[in-house]
Length: 476
Image (tube, rainbow, N blue to C red; front, side, top):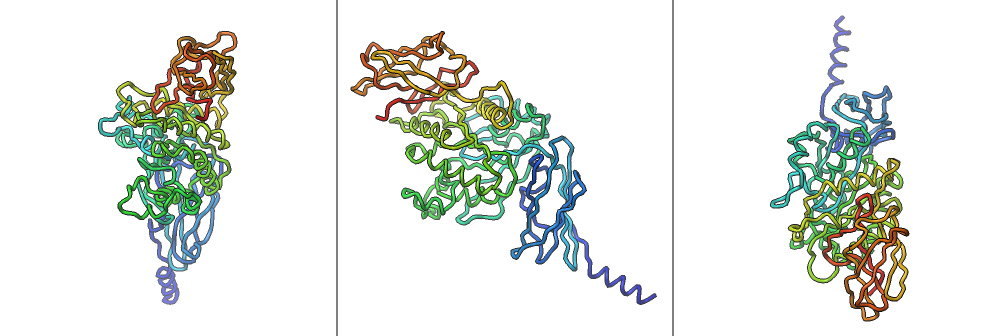
């Protein structure tokens, strides 16, 4: 009897059960949304030579692995169809001496999107000082009705080397939480949730003022002769303009999280660098897609905000580069913002109308990613121009039913061989749906431009309310 009791005591002493000691990145936690009907990655760290078992409330499978040499581990877990059931996930770590458990709760299965860029993506529903978001109070109040929307906001985190983890916990949509949710990201999720009728998860990984180069790795930046990597560690250089530190500190730690696609709202800090912007955006998208390892994820982005960028037409060239980028990057679409500006906002780089930006992004996603029929989500783009001495006929894509207004159209300019541009008279031909323009100041038209200035408010739309993209036919 004493011998049996001794063995029992010995077994109890050598197997200790503990709770909540397994280390997980914050992005793997309570309230998270997991991408539906796929395999998602769950990862963390444990003790040396530990066995890790992960089980879920939605199936009976157990996913087992071992910790690696650096004590890290990861498993791929199958997810079911999206729904409103609140799930849990149990992680068990076993060694010869211990058994540790961590339970994650209030997990939803739905659609997950990754949002990034600079301040217009980072801007919360609460707005910035003297810079509100239109309708913010209503959206914040109603947020409590949409607790199936979740957001993880990643704080500004710089690093000179790629990191393995970053702060950023999932939060439910409540009035208290939603005031600090990125406005464009949240309102995008709201549109998606209403259309798809599934939970929506958003990871908002943005840093106000950041250049595109801040979201690229060092190895790629070294290919760019105008980028000085030493700026990243220079304490006198503005943090938000530094290269690579956002990629290392914020983006890299999240690349294991399974997502549906990317949203990008950036470019204002690259005004003046239009010659390299399209190619570098293509580089960035290629690298992100490759490092996430989930195939050709959709990449939908927003045209730079209308704003008084100063003298010259540098902003117009950047918009041109963005329009070029959407044609260079497979699976990308640009949402135009050229019409979303109040008269008093010309000197405010954070326009208040974030709901229209979000709605346009949602329409692009619903049409291109989720296959909704009947939606027209792309802005009219110039297709070709026929010049007939003192008249030009303009052909557009994405304007199947013509334009509004169809007469007295503002924003067009024409020039002759002297390269001097004059405002043009413009109207939409009711038969052909093309736009005809002319000017009494130009006898032989050689070039056409539309809203090609640093600051223009576009007043021409297709019949679905999408603004015509600015353009120029010349390369002067």
